[in-house]
Structures are given as C-alpha cells and as structure tokens.
Image 1 (cartoon, rainbow, N blue to C red):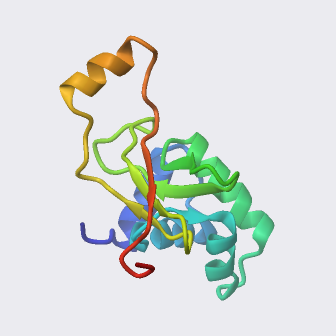
Image 2 (image 1 turned 60 degrees about the vertical axis):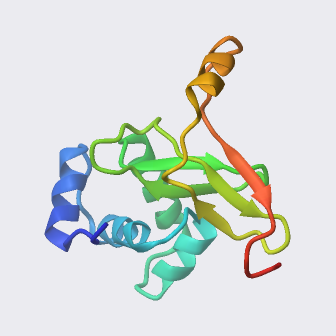
Length: 141
C-alpha cells in the first residue's frame, strides 16, 4: 500500500474532526510507513527528532484512536501499540498479529482469516476481537 501524501493525511485528520497539526500529520505519516504496530515509546522516539515531546505524541495517539484513525491493540505484554485504520476498514476491525517470544518483534498477518467453522464455534462463546499468534520469528530461529 503506498504511503499517503501529506495533504491527504491533513484531509483525513480534518475529516475525522481533528485539527491537522504538524504533530498529528507526522504521527499519522509515521504509522502509515511502519510495517508493524508501534508503541507510544516508538512513536515518541521517532517524533522527538522533529521536536515533538512525549506528552504530545501520547495525546495525539489517543485523540486519533478516539477519532477512528488509529487502532490500539495490546498483545499480552501490557503495552499499547498503534496502527492506522485502513481505508474502508472500521476502527474495531482487526487482523492477527504474530509476536516473537524471543525478540518481541510484532508482525501483522493481514491475509489470515478465521475459517467459517472457527467463526461459528467462536460465536457460540462471544465475539472474536483479536487473534494473536506467538512463536519464533525467522530471525531468531
């Protein structure tokens, strides 16, 4: 998926009802360019180079999550990670993630879906909101 242009990011932020500040544009641009969800610490570290402080990064991540531009997920380590909501997706849609138990690397598994049999079985219990796979990544094996 190609990274959106700055003006497209500004428009997206405004359409979500937020001011398109330089910090928000930089945050959304960073997340669109990332290959996996980023933590607040990851985002703050990258944005510090642009003079954006940790508190602003945190506030913008939460504001854009509340506005439906970002998805927030916790992968069992009590750390929130953020990723952009794709065009045509809704904020509560999710996709599976793979977490390496050795290095902690997180990978998105966008193409994986539950089978119809799995969906039917899970609906008897409740609603699936997250699928998390753990294992050893290729770098660590």
